Length: 502
Image (cartoon, rainbow, N blue to C red):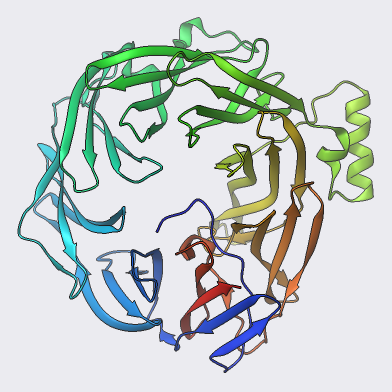
C-alpha cells in the first residue's frame, strides 16, 4: 500500500529482535549482507506479513537490480530484474504497485523508438504472466532539434485509475503534442486521446499531472514567454491547468495570484473531487516570501476558497543564531528581500477533515573546485538538506499556521544518500524523522507538530560507535495505517524492521 507518509518509529541499536518504548513496537530482521547494495523501494499489498523490495547494486556500470520477497522480514524469494544495454538498445524493468496488484513494467528504448509494456507479477514465486500489455510506443524523429518524447504517470486516490501523459517527439519550435492514456487497475485500457497544446514545445514545461477517481486527467503546465519578449523583474511565465477526458481537452484554466509570482505549486484532489492547489509565492520572483492555497471546483473551476499568508520575520529567523537573526532583521528594515531561497515543495497531504498540510524543504546542491600547490584541481559536490517548512490548512481552506523545523544536513559527493526526512501523520500529530550527525556518529531525530502547531522534539536512542546505522529516508515505507517498514544501512550490513504503532 503506497502512502504520502512514511512511518513514526523508535530506532534502537542492539542485538535484540524485539523492543518496545511508549506505543512503538519494533521487530528487527536479520542482518543483511550489503555487498554494496541498497533497497531503493518497498512495496506491500494485501498480506501485511509480506513485503516486496527493489534492491540495487551501487555499481557505476552494469548495475544489478533485484526484486525480493520477504515474509516476516526474512528473505524467501529473489529474481533479477532486466537491465541490459545491447547494440544501442536499452532494456529496463521496474515494478508498479496498483490497488493491491503488482506489475512488471518493461521499458525498451532503441535508436528509432521506445516503448513501455506491462506484465502481471505472480507473487507466489515472483514469476510473470505470459500476457503482455502495451502501455505506449513512441517513434522518434530525426534531427538535432528534435525532442525524444517523455511521459508522466499518475494514479488516482482510490488506485483504480492509472494515467500516462506521453509527450511526443518533435521540433522544439512546434506545438506540444501529447497522448493521454487511461487504464483501470487491471491495466485494461479505458480510453486514449491525442491532444495538441497551443504553445511551443520549447516554451512548455509539464510540471505534474493527476487523475481523479472518475478518470479525468488534470495537467499542470508552465508556459514561458519567448526569450526576446522577457522583461527583467516581470513575470515571464504563466501556469495553466489542462482538463482532459476521453473527448480531448475540455477546459484550460490559468492559475494566478494577481501581483505575486508563483514559485512552487502542486495539485492534488480531495475525497470529494475538488482540486487542491497550494505552494509558495514570491514578491519579486526570486525567493519564497509566503504561502498560498486554493480549493477549486473540478467541474466549474471556480475558486471555492483561497488564502495567502506572508512569512513573518519570526518565521524566517526561527532557528538562526543571534547574529544571523540581527543581520536578517536589519535587511528587512532596509526594505531588502529576506525570503526563503532553495525551497523545494515536497507534498500536499490531504487530511481526513478536508484540510491539508503543505510540506517543503530547503535543498541546495552546488559544486566547488579547488587547486592544490601542484596545480591539480578537484571538484566537490555539496548536498545541503536543511530546514523543513510546514503549513497547516483548515477544512475551510484557511492557512492556520506556518512552522519551520530547523535541520542541518551537509554531505559531499554522496548524492544526499542519508539526507532529507520521512514523515507520518498519526492521530493529531505529524512527525518528521531524520538523521542527525553528532560527534562523528548519527542519531535519529524526531520532531512532532500537533494540530495547533506546537512542537516537541528529541533524540530516539542514539547510535553506538561500533554500529553507526543510518536511516535511508527514501527507502522507508508505510504498509498499513499503523505499520511501517524501516530500512537502515551500516558499513558492514543493512537491516529491515517492522514498526507497529499501538
